Amino acid sequence: MKTNSIQEKKYSGISNPSGAVALNDNLFIVADDEDNVLRIYDRNVLDKPLQSIKLSAVFKGEIEDGEDLEIDLESAAEIGRTVFWIGSHSSSRTGEYREARHRILAVNIKLGAKDKYSVTAVGIIYKTLIADLQDDSRFNEYHFGKAKKTQAKALGGLSIEGLASTPDNGLLIGFRNPLGGGDVEKGRLEKGKALIVKLKNPFEVIHGLKAKFADPIVLDLDGFGIREITRRKKHKYLVVAGPYHENIATEDHKKEAGKLYKWSSKSGKLNELKRFDLDGYNIEAALFYPGNDDCVQLLSDDGTLEGANGFRSLTLTL
Image: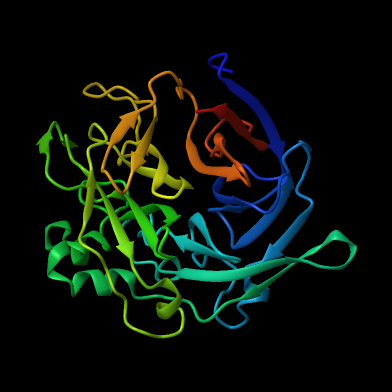
């Protein structure tokens, strides 16, 4: 616990939570970026998940389990009763192209018999986001053709970590990397600006139609990229920001703590929430429960911690 404004819990079962949405006032469903499984937790039960759903069973023949086949699920967003999930679209640690990570998929999640949830596929998997962005000259400065073959946390690499709905049933896709602008100093990009891509027609692309994008949205997050973006209400969002790079302390650079921002997609107003100290956490998921847009639950990817056997959750009042 870092401040009096933050309540910390620890859940067991997985260590790498990477995207989540609330199912009701008490339950949330979360992805782990190390496998293709969705897990349902009770926010008040700090034990293993109540239920696990393999996406390979939901998208039979389209999603497979095994080495190098993980989607690297990073974020989720709900539009109506449909939940969209996005893969990182990143390369491997050595810069090799990973086709399985180029995924935006949608599911319906319904409560069935014996308090078990059923998950069913909606449409088909959208696999050509980066290719479509390459074909759109408005995004030329991000060099997506090169980025998709560059290590995710390297300068000019590719990593998607945020997804949020819009009031007009679109999706905002938040990029950790690449950033725009800035200057390279001592091997790192400084003062770069984070990119958000609005996909205007998510329901159409999962039914095979061509993607439609709005103009690029750039946010000045003090040189950070987007680690998560979540809609609070209407045009108001919570943005989790963090370094685009590996964030390891070196002789030239110190390790940096993540930051939280409030952002209005309508006015463009962006405010850092400086009263919350995220030092020591690696926040990759954020969710609001129904009817409570002033209280957010943040999930920390603790997979790199020694002896990790679970993940920490921070609940804070904005």
